[in-house]
Length: 72
Image (cartoon, rainbow, N blue to C red; front, side, top):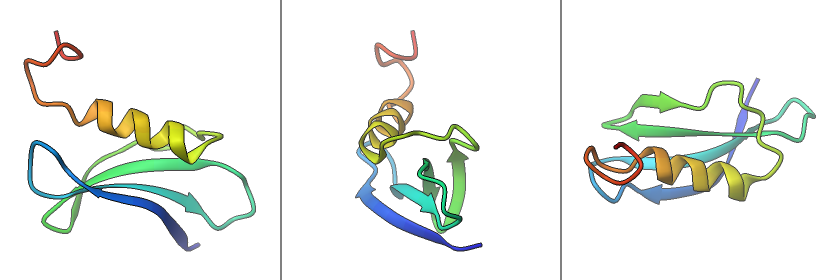
């Protein structure tokens, strides 16, 4: 199974990138992952987002630094 990267942005608070991808299995679902030094450090798993924009939003929120409003 292959994946298609739809969005790739640099991480704001650490080295690495945030990616939104679609599995090329015919299903219209999207996932996100956070990479650092070429390794996946976090992945949405099987969340099955219906929109790549919503997956990107959640990935950026997840990647906020400790002590931010989200992490309190």
